[in-house]
Length: 226
Image (cartoon, rainbow, N blue to C red):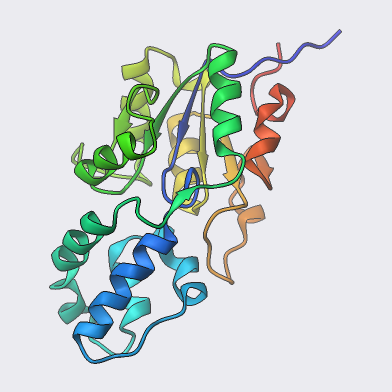
């Protein structure tokens, strides 16, 4: 009889995968817009680009401003975000149950994000994850970031598992590209952020999951059939 088991380790993207951080980011964008004499932006208009990073969010918030000018605002954006960190956003529904299920079955878990490491680390105690997350790699921890596979490989090594025994979960195509290049099974988090034109079915992830709670079942995970 075929058995199923949880992976030895799981690595997660952060924004749009574990945490619905869009409410924090819209507070930042609207503060910047107000400071520049502009009205508020709707959360629904920012949400699709959150996983693309600060420059993409600034592009959505200030579409008429040249990219070269917006780039000079990135540090302001990050400084304001540090003040809003964790005040509005929270884990997606079902994430805590999923993490508890992994822990109950002895699965180590960690985070590989393109968010600056200092911001990701400041968020951990706000979520009570600082003693549970076994490795955290930020976008500036190493010389490269996703979609390069090195951050994923580095995180797996830090946990002490082979990449083939570690699953990566993310909501953006670069997450799946990085996992594939690392030889790591992948889960496409369909509950996350993506542009209307994005086609997650074309990313060639190993499995596509609609809700975090589905991952409380060992059979939902890729590459874990014994």
